[in-house]
Picture (cartoon, rainbow, N blue to C red):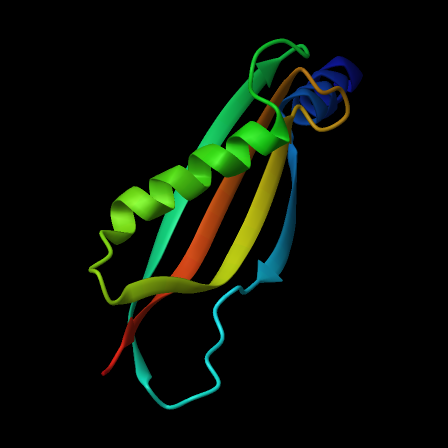
Amino acid sequence: MRNTIFIAVTSLFLLTGCAAHFGTLKSDVSLNQANFKVVTTASGSSQTKLVMGFGGLKKEALVAEARKDLVSKANLAPNQVLANLSLDVKTSIFPGFLPMVVIQKVTVTADVIEFIK
């Protein structure tokens, strides 16, 4: 009975993971006049996986890849810009107590603004 409980508890610890979320908000566009409308929201993401500390990209490269994905998905018209950029970073660690696999995902979200003449 004790061996069964020990194996169950050990398995539970080995199979658990944890995750953390971080985000910041940045905006470069001045929207102080009533000459625009919000068309939609677009997002782009990038992900990397490290196994025992090997592989993956640096955080700066993940942000650049996510921004590039955002711009390609937004498909902006000549009178449209991206505003209210939000950067979210999620780091997942498996198993939770010994980082064997670390997955880091960066998502950049923005509002597509269209200026009215």
